Image (cartoon, rainbow, N blue to C red; front, side):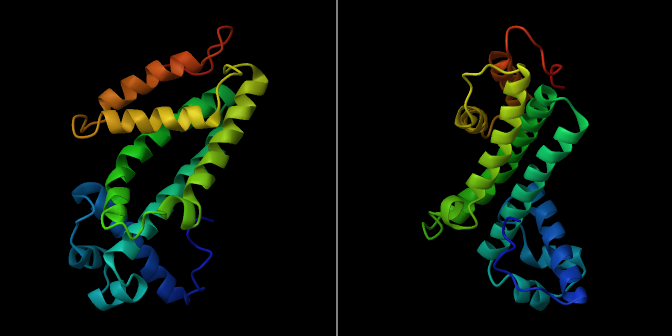
Length: 202
């Protein structure tokens, strides 16, 4: 699992506190950005500041944990879509999830990269980029084997498209409507001419 390999097992009560802080931080960063108050995060988690800092010694450590948590959730969604839908629908639904993830995570990554000390974050810190690429690649292969997605599409193409849409709509698409519309246009170009693997997005 992403981001968990280097962390020692915790006692049950400590694990509960860790999970509460992480959940509160995830909500706070999504609402207020990467500069959200650590004291408020601790309060929402029902723990003291000392407990928060025991698990996450710095803001960067907490940001990394939330970033990894989002990667895990995104990859888990790939499996959920695979179990619930045919391959084309599963792929397109997951790409919409990835579109949402890219927008939500942009501020976290920017904060982690701000001073240059985490410049190798995606490559060196638990290989988050590779984890996402593997999940996307599996969905794509299954959709292509069924003939619902063009065989010329590569995993890197899909991820680049979603990342480009996220960057293009930064700061001008608060509700995600424009990003979703652009993604649907991109997905139309991925569909095999003979098949329509997924209904239009919301």
